[in-house]
Image (cartoon, rainbow, N blue to C red):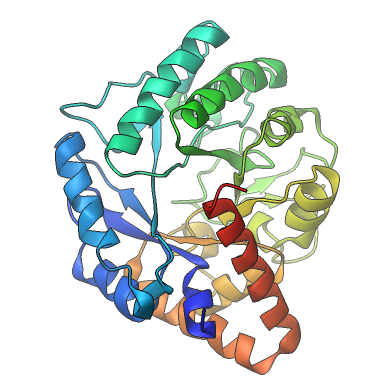
Length: 336
């Protein structure tokens, strides 16, 4: 791969679930973007979704991605967060409701949900949510508890049922994504729409990390990192989760022995990131040890792409981080 093509592998760009827009198609062609996710909502069903996916996978060529396949993802958690519905797709209950099923039943159901995604051409599910929120705090927890995205109210319950979902998705030949490391169960604000969101409780060896550690031990190859601040983990100014080498390097790589893809939460539209330019957001993430930038605004990708490319051309140490991230992405894409 050329350096330009390698940099393109570092991005996952948003595409409309009912059809990719011009901006998305442009970054697939011109910025060599190697990964997309279907965003928004579609009730058109499996066949229509497969056509949307083909529209994008047909861009793969020697010129765009060196013929490396396009990894297509979506958010198919269930409940309030289910991007794809309609003919062929099951109606998936909330995480909290899933948590009332036996582990065996949930795994069997999730295998079916995974198969549905695979038939539509989806290779990655940006689920399960492995954040732990207590029952008393859930109504005040905007990102997770408010939407009943949690699998239970204790780390043990979330670990058991969240990982039952994860096992089923894997059995359906789709790659699951454990999120949002190291947890969003103790914040009040949602980083997508609120800035200065802080977790003041979670520690580097917190009991609430159990669901994530279990997922990694069970073979999860994708982990999404949160954009909240973790005051008791990395108190340095500006070092929110997606910019922290303590969160991604020490906690995920060293302590949890995770060797797969560390993907960001949305670095483009999230209010939490508003003080940084698009390019700096991507640079900070990769510099801190992140693997893949998820971006909900395809118009931002060229700014991020060029920022990463220029820095890689200027700094050998940053180029080494880019190359290491790309190697991780390609290794995971090919099932290793």
